[in-house]
Length: 79
Image 1 (cartoon, rainbow, N blue to C red):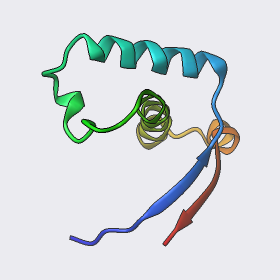
Image 2 (image 1 turned 180 degrees about the horizontal axis):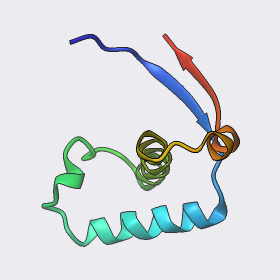
Image 3 (image 1 turned 90 degrees about the horizontal axis):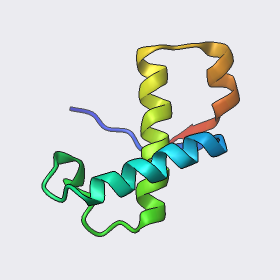
C-alpha cells in the first residue's frame, strides 16, 4: 500500500466549531469508544480541529459540491 502525506488548509464557521466542541465533550463521557483509538495524547484543541477536518473532508468525499469545497478547502499540498 502506498501512502502520501498531505496538508490541508481549511476554513470553517463558528457553527462548525461549536458542533466539533460539543462532539468532543460528548466523547469524553465515553472513554471506551473507538473514537479514542490513536487520540490518547491529544489535547482538546487538537481533537476539535481534527473533528472539523474529518467532517469537512469526509463530507466532500461522500457528497462533493465543488462550489462549497472551494470555500472550505483553501489549499492542499502533497509531500
